[in-house]
Length: 260
Image (tube, rainbow, N blue to C red; front, side, top):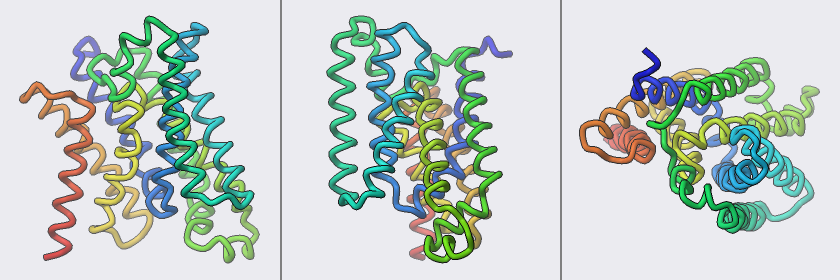
């Protein structure tokens, strides 16, 4: 069954949806969209270094994305203006990654696949990385759910309750780096943030509790993967962007219902 490229693509997309749905809720609640962009854009540098040193793309991407997430978290905690800092980090990381990629001949040919993803080229080894990373992220979120939600809703109250808000922020940064690493082959560095933000934003319309929103966001992300792959097959459109377009359509549908 796994010899069918479309089945492998669907399994990869569903694995990403499993992690991106609930994690995206925290990105939306904490207004971390630009933070996600910074981490995702740094993934291109990780890909370039992976090709240059002959290591796994997932390991290289995870290392660089994690370093970027920790760097930004540390600098933001020291009082730097967040918008300016994240803007510098996001664009500098992407530019540095593209420059580094230009020195790697093999990567220069395939760079588009890592910018926009190539889910139809996912192999069995990729599935192991994607599902392994997704389950680790899901396990982290389930384990720390109440603390993460408390620290997100009101940091001062959370600190008064004995919750280490810095630790919770660090856990989210690690989870974000993991999702970026597993998503680089599916939707690419430029569209990872969309898979985190759009399904979660769409889920807000139908949600009454944080848990409800996380479940709905996961469901919408899964439906987006299915709809995106179907439209890609029918219309011969690029699969990764088609998945994001499907997620945007769910968001637009929800926004119209909310207005009505």
